[in-house]
Length: 416
Image (cartoon, rainbow, N blue to C red; front, side, top):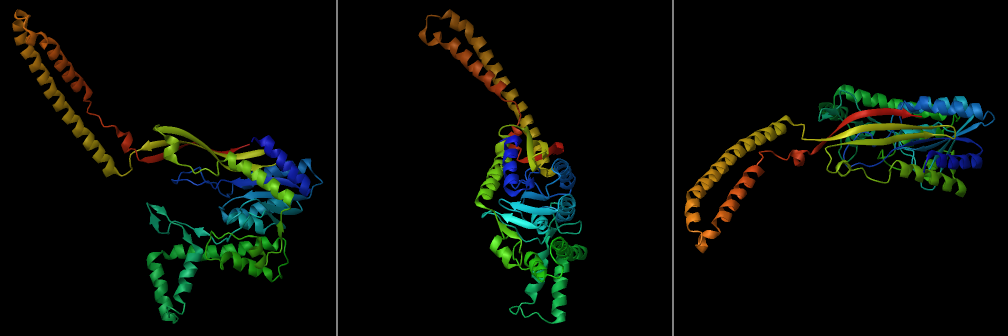
């Protein structure tokens, strides 16, 4: 379905809710390999894009006070939530979030800054405890590994459990030393800073539409940052309400149908329901252009998409020892081929010489039945030897050795 068809559904939602709608859909497509350009995330570059939509809408529809942000995302940059929410509130008096399937992590933070969160029966939010990575984090394949804030706090809480009987200050110090032995102190400092930041950010977003003295604010923040045992836990409407979130709304039957129809189109357009397998995509090609859309932001006035174009290239493993071994084997095979071809050429020459010696006798005794078929037999032997010699190339078919896929970016960025 093209944008013009999605625009019709957006207009129906606007008519139903007496609002203007902007969609923000990031790809959560699964992939068998960690290929960039498959997953989309909440990110800072989306703020300038949404400003374009807001200005167009506010210029054309001056009397509309409510903006509904239709969100489907598994998360991303937590710091994007604050500016994005504020620019929406600077343009519209009322700000609501519409969730068809999921608005997790950073998308949940955006929802915290809204006046109302309208959910289908399939929709969920999630905890907002971040996973942080900086240059001091433990590395794997020379890449910093993310550290979950709640993993660190849970480790220290585990040490205090009765079963482990670690309660004295001395023992707790030893436990902390054990943690520091595995994780750089500055990485742990970053964890602490992120833990504090996420709580303060969640409170600031809630304060945009709730009384600062409301006791449910602490309950909401605690429920989303500390009380869940998994960052990937899906929080549905009733559980969110039990935390103290009073602005959760059920989509009406008509709204739910429209929300899900719109999502189905994005799902098909972005192939969200199809696992990406780079090897299947490449097939027998050594290089192939892959174009994906990781994010859609749309309103009735504009369609914005984040396009990711790249060449996928099959290569041998980056391990220099592996590549060196391939070259050594290739050279050895080439040398062996030269020797074998020379030996076959010598055999062919010998056969020709023998035939040359026998040819006069065959001609003189042409009537002897056993000699009549010898010319054809010698010709067949010589042709077979020639074919065998020509078939030895000394080359390795390295296509089977290309087990790694590299990426070469062609174009990335927003397309309006």
